[in-house]
Structure formats: structure tokens, C-alpha cells
Image (cartoon, rainbow, N blue to C red; front, side, top):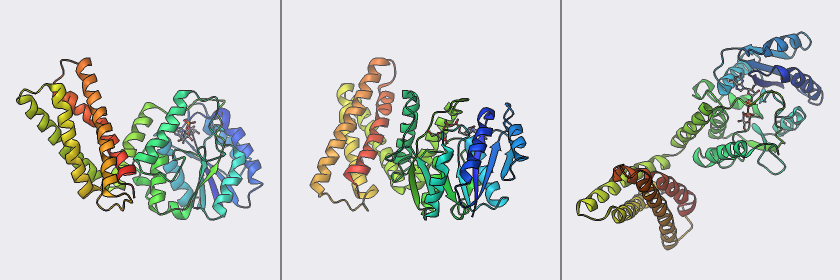
Length: 364
Ligand code: GDD
């Protein structure tokens, strides 16, 4: 079997030669034809030149150069090259900065040899870990990214959806239209995993210790985070007609809410009283539609009464969230029209409503 380890690089000159040397040592423990493909975006620090020098020592090193377009774009180019030009049977994704230990490569390959299609070096299964040195910001990014991928994009069954250390069978990759993933940066990890699950890939998570880099710094930027969130929403749309129905229901609830609120104001009701009445009316109309349409096909094991009780609880939570947002905004921005504050208050309430109803009230 021919295996190609794809390593995207942007300014990794201080890491790349030692990584390649250590990988060559590990290849001695793997009974496959092992190759390395460095995908460098013309790093100004001379990463590619270092790789070229190593190419004269090792025939199994390949170099692909291109314009900097992001981590995901580099992987798409690398995987396309590995499949079509190098004729790989297996490809790996791996960072250049020793975050992923070369000594874990044989374990990931082993899991693939044992029948998995898509092996993830996972930090969030038992035995896996993130670095102690990570500050709260990096920890939160990683945890939050996984929560968004699992619960928004719908990849619940995977614990580490954002991992960048993975081994994938080419038979699976060939079924996926890589050029159509429409992501440039770190969102690639979730976009590819989503496609793998659509194609019913056998996914296996192997615990790994993620090590903090010593040389250089993370290239994750704000645009990557924004793309990540937009992509998760897009995947949610694609994954579920349920969510679309929920949004249509929600939109009808907005009309009910604002209509009722405006009518109450018109009849002279105080805005702080009109707001919760309007919210509650829209929650009730949302429930009627969600129960009879959005989640109609769900085989919930609860009786109608229990479902009703759960719904009431969710409604109360959504009501208090929406109302407290409304009160907060009314105090903070007294000149804003009350309809605007009311509208903003609906947003978090809608999300909480969806997740609690989908994963609790109407759980299959
Ligand atoms: N060619 C290319 N182009 N390579 C890039 C680019 C790019 O635009 N951006 C980053 N890289 C390379 C880096 O040089 C490194 O080898 C690898 O991609 C990962 O980049 P880092 O910047 O070190 O990633 P990170 O530590 O923030 O993120 C890691 O963990 C994330 C999950 O927490 C990666 O493994 C991510 O893939 C993973 O999602």
C-alpha cells in the first residue's frame, strides 16, 4: 500500500527537516510504501529550499508549491496531487510543527490496516490530551470549535472534529469532490469530516497527546474562525431539513412576536409587559408548528404530557433569555426602538429553543 503523509507548511523552516528525519525513522516500523508530500505556499523563511535539500537524500519526499490561500486550500491541492499524481492508497494529514508526534504515525496506520476508513488522532477521547501550556483562550477556541462542529454542524459521534492529524483511505477520498468543499482555512477539517460521514466512512478515533509547538506560532486567524462558524451553519443547513423547517417556524414566530408586541403597544400596554406576552405567544405558535411539522417524524419515547412539560420548561428558559436581553438592551440603549431590542432578544432564544427541543424534547 502506498501512503502519502501530507504536511502543509507556512514558515516552518525551523521544524521541517527534523520532522522529516523523525518520520523516516518511524517508517522503518510500517510495512507500507511511505512517502512525504510537503505543500508549501512559498514560505518566505525558505521552508521549500530546506525540503529540496532533503529530497536529494530521500527519494520518498515530494514538494508541491503554490500561492498562499489557507490551510484547507493547501490540503485540497495536496490530496488531489497525492491521489492523481502519486497514486496514493492512503493519505495522512499532519502538522509540521511537532504538535503531532511522529511516533504516533504507526498507531494511526495500524487502525486503518484494521479496517477503518478515516482515522483521527484524537485529543478528546480517553487517553488523549491537549498541552498543559495552552492558555484559556486556546483551550476555549478548541473546545468551542468542537462544540460548534458536533452540535451545530451535526457531527455528534466524533469527539475531536477539528483534529489535524488524520489518516484517510483514498477509496473514500475519491468519492468526495474536494474542489467543491468551498473552504479555504481551518474549516477544512470539519468540512472533510462531514463529507466522510455522508459517505458512511468507518471513523476511528485514536488517543493522541497534542504537543505545543516550540518554534514559530499558530497561523489560525480571525478570518479562519469566522469561516469556521459560517461553514458549520452551512453544514447544518445541508444536513437537516429539520433545521430549515425550524427556521421557517422561527420566522413565523418572529412575525407573531413583533405583531403581538406592536398591537399591545398600540393598545397602550407598557413595553416591559408587552414584551414577555409577545414572546410567550410566539413560543406557543412555534411549538404548535414544531410539534406538528418540524419534529413530526421523531419517534420520541416520552408521552405527550412529558413532552409538553419539557416544552414548557424550554419555553420558560427561552422566555427569560429573550426578556433579559430585551431589558438589558433597553437600559443600555434607551434610544433604540423597542422593536429592535425585542428582535435582538429573539435570537439567542431561538437557538436555545432549537437545541433543547431537538436534543431533549423531541429526541429520537
Ligand atoms: N501551506 C500552508 N498554507 N500551510 C499552512 C497554512 C497555509 O495557509 N496555514 C497553516 N499551515 C500549516 C502550518 O505551517 C502547520 O504545519 C499546519 O498547517 C498547522 O498550522 P498551525 O498554525 O500550527 O495550526 P494550529 O496549531 O493553530 O492548529 C492545529 O490544531 C487545530 C485544532 O486545534 C492544526 O492541526 C489544525 O488543523 C487543527 O484544526
